[in-house]
Length: 162
Image (cartoon, rainbow, N blue to C red):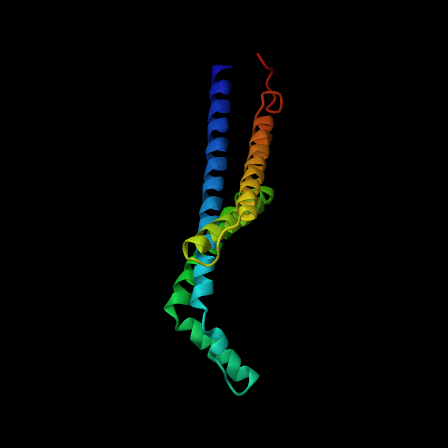
């Protein structure tokens, strides 16, 4: 009986560690996506001035402008690193946790970074929205923790409670 309880404790510890790791990775994805968005926008300034004679020539000129612009390409590459991390995290994370955490926090980090870069003044409604986003994200995580606890309860593992 002691061995069974020890195994159950290890299972609980590994499950919570796995959950915490997933949330940390998803937050890192949100940081990579959110922080780079305003920099990508700044790096693309001047794209509207690129002109060519044909539609195809315009397309090629715009691609060349973006690829040769370090102010655009570096944040873009960091953003894509976030996408790769998201893809890798999705392999082992419940999508009902991954999407709300990464996408909602991306908006928060984009707003904060844009404010630091002087894009626009952050209004009271933006702050309220960020607070609501954070509350919703916490509720999503809380729900997943509750599911994990229910999953690893003694009755679901086939043990009698003492």
